[in-house]
Amino acid sequence: MVLRRAPLVLGAIVLVASAAIAAVLLSYTNSSTVTVTLKAPPVIWTAGPDSSGNVFVSGMAISSNATYFSITLKPVPEANVTWSNLTTVKNQDSSSVTDVTVTGTSLAAYTAYTTVARLEFYDYAAPSTIVATLDLTQASPSADLGALTAGQQLFAKAYMKVASGTGQQNIPASITLSLTVTP
Amino acid sequence: MRSSLPALLTLILIAGLTHATPTLSLSTSSTATLALLSGATAPIQLTAIAPSVTIGANATQLAASAVSAGIAVPTSTNLTAAADTTASDLRIRLSHISTSGTGVSECVSCKLQLVCGGTTSDQIVITLGAVANATGSYQTAGAAGTNCATWYIWSVAQGTLVADKTATLNFDLDVQPSGSSFPNATYVSLSVSWTV
Image 1 (cartoon, chains in turn blue, orange):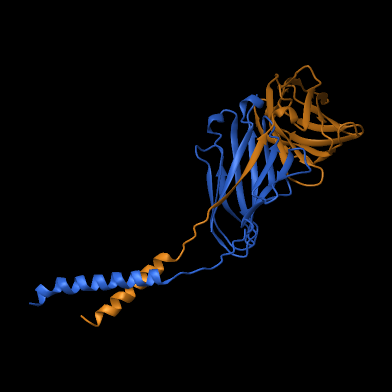
Image 2 (cartoon, helix red, strand yellow; image 1 turned 180 degrees about the vertical axis):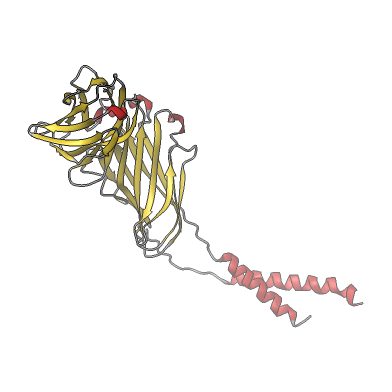
């Protein structure tokens, strides 16, 4: 007897519940104002001390919102060139971000000419540590910098070595780095 | 059963409200472009002085072959000019990478110097077959057109009376800004072979 009545009871509950939801949803004629403001990007590029004023770089430029920068490097054939701090990645927000990833153009096709091409990201806050390395000679260069706390800044040390006989036609005109930030 | 109805409605309402709560998932991205210039911009350009010296196409590669060494007294040879072609002062030095050849042990004294005007700096020194000084001190190369914008790499070598053999020294040229250690370049394809 109980079992026979159960479907009826359950149906009644669903009907009542549906009616209740409908009543709740229809009873609101809500009018409100939402103000949306654009916040500054949390993570930005900044110029490192080696980004200008020396013979190994030129044309450093950072966009007004600091989400884009360009620079011309001057690697030397038959030589290793090292930039101590070419650029930085900084969390300028008052909150932490969950994850920051840097990806870059692959130079794998230029192996014969670009034997070393990498950026090392350092956190100089004590103790000084290397956080990640972006090896541009890999097929899909990527470096996970992890979380950045409010105000945290990482410095990018750059290494470039080009082999003998390297000319403009042997190396790409430019390398693009992309910075992805997950709040 | 009756008492469970309000609870069920409450659950459904909570579920509806929860579902309605907006979830923001943001992903910002930014980019950087690193342009690359060719080797024509090498800050220090090498130029051969001695006939035994070959300079690479980019003026950053040097090979000095069969440089004679004296017996009773050392023989001095001006091998190469290293010129600052930029508008900035730079610092340069020579550093030992490796030695090879059966003649190394015959090097009573084989060394490379940097010379500018009246200034002479011993950079790499091999004494009685052993490397006595592997790295020279930095010398300031003035901006192009100024005093000591060009330094000369000299070979000063003394061998023995034993039959001539070859001693080869592979070395590099380190280039730095005048006021700091970075950025820097290390020219790694330089060598000199002595007949001792």
